[in-house]
Image 1 (cartoon, rainbow, N blue to C red):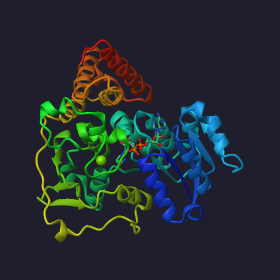
Image 2 (cartoon, rainbow, N blue to C red):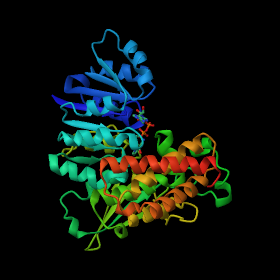
Image 3 (cartoon, rainbow, N blue to C red):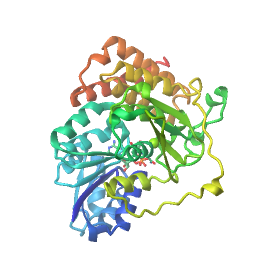
Image 4 (cartoon, rainbow, N blue to C red):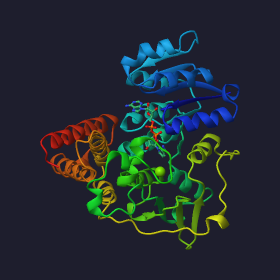
Length: 392
Ligand code: NAD
Ligand code: MG
């Protein structure tokens, strides 16, 4: 039986992953090694029971007694904390879903690669903060990273059987998020509730707000550069409000290969789960005659500065991705807590990046796990200093 683990099983990607594992035979077909979650220990325990997992890990040590109680009598091990997550990722496994949100997902995924496990990577922050490190580690241990972000899964699929030398450009699409057509002055007053509803995709709150600010697309541009090892100039973003074309690959003979599908993450998750085969998946089939037309337009960099910042991050290199992501996470926390406004998020990230790249020369820092963590901590500290002193 294939041994699998799901990190972040209680989140949006995690629940969709367990849905597919269950449809594909559940505990009869898979040996589920570890599941992990946050404070939602009842959901985590019920997932672990229904898939007969060996271990359930909560990220929070204070949640351990509640998790133990919820697992009582099941024979399933309980553990808590960051070290326990890494330990769980070290257990012999054939396939691991990395679906923790934020930079917290890096360490368990990195550990899985060190053990040669195939890593289905939804946690884009891992590639943004430590792309070269992850790819080198995967190569060293013969491990494979399979992209789970819908755009990157689409590119990956469009590249099957192709040589990278023949690729001219990679175009990832953006729905435009909740504020696609909002003018700049209205964006300044956007509320958390307004930013938390996505027109096309059902996702966790953080990535939904990142979609509204286009920080999600900014992370994805960097993710594209890191995963496919292409020049930043080859990567384009196209606003496509219907979210049916997920990405396109342009080849040197002028051909454009597009990937289309319903906006349902179970496609990308299922592709990574069954790769290199394709299994039947419970996603809606597109009726193109009914849909009638698809539309595309260029993104507006004035209203969505995150995309411009992503270009700067790629130019700086080194641990700039870690600084960018950590400042973005801190800015997002502050926006969710209503300490800063919607547009302040980009201002804050830009400030942190500017200060850190001049002061420490981020571009010259080697991308090691320690340096990434140190840059991450520094960027968060700087962001909170800027917020508390009102320098945004
Ligand atoms: P979510 O918020 O719904 O779930 C996050 C999961 O991570 C939960 O299980 C939560 O308990 C856990 N978690 C949160 N903070 C943690 C911490 N500090 N330590 C350990 N565990 C923690 O998020 P999501 O929307 O499922 O997204 C997960 C990842 O997948 C993100 O990196 C996101 O960018 C990426 N992604 C998501 C989608 C989507 O459709 N939701 C699409 C593409 C990529
Ligand atoms: Mg995506």
